[in-house]
Every structure is written in C-alpha cells, then in structure tokens.
Image 1 (cartoon, rainbow, N blue to C red):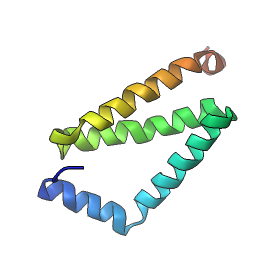
Image 2 (cartoon, one colour):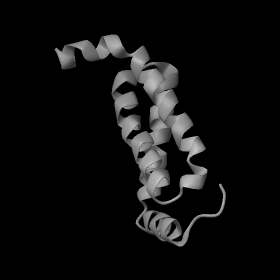
Image 3 (cartoon, rainbow, N blue to C red):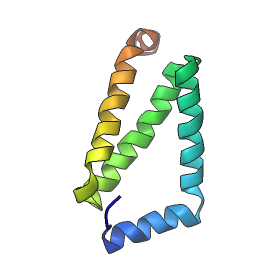
Amino acid sequence: MGDMSADAGAYFGALVNSKTLTLVALVEIVAGIVLIFNKFGALLALILMSVSVNAVLFHTTLDPGNIAGALVLLVLNIAVLYGYKDKYKALLS
C-alpha cells in the first residue's frame, strides 16, 4: 500500500482505533472460508459486496492513486455474485 493523503490517513486511523477494520477482517475471513466450502456462499457474497463498494468509495474519494486493488476486488465480487445468480432469482421476483 502506498502513501495516503492526510485525510485518508486520518480516516484509516479512525477505522483502526475503533476496531472497525478488525470486524471487517473477521467478516472477510469467514466469508472466504464459507466460499471455499460453498456453504451459504450466496449470502456471504452479498455481504462482501458492501466491503467491496466501501473500498472503492474510500479510494475514489480519499486515495485515488491506490484504487486498482479495490477495483479488482469489486470485479471479482461481481463475478462471484453472477455465479450465484440462480440463488437470487427468488429474491428478485
């Protein structure tokens, strides 16, 4: 990760101090394990989408120079959601 702007560093520091990043890390680990074992994968893919969107928004507004990783994460998350599209048909009908 490269150097962040002062605003991005302050925001990131607040997330670390409030233990929000610890919670996000736990969600990502649990979601990864669930996706590996294909148990409740459709649900966790939706939950991970919020992490992906927030990462893109963070980098778009506060740290645009390091947005590449967040965009890759978002594209991969969309691909996983597309893979589970049959599971979402009942929700969207």
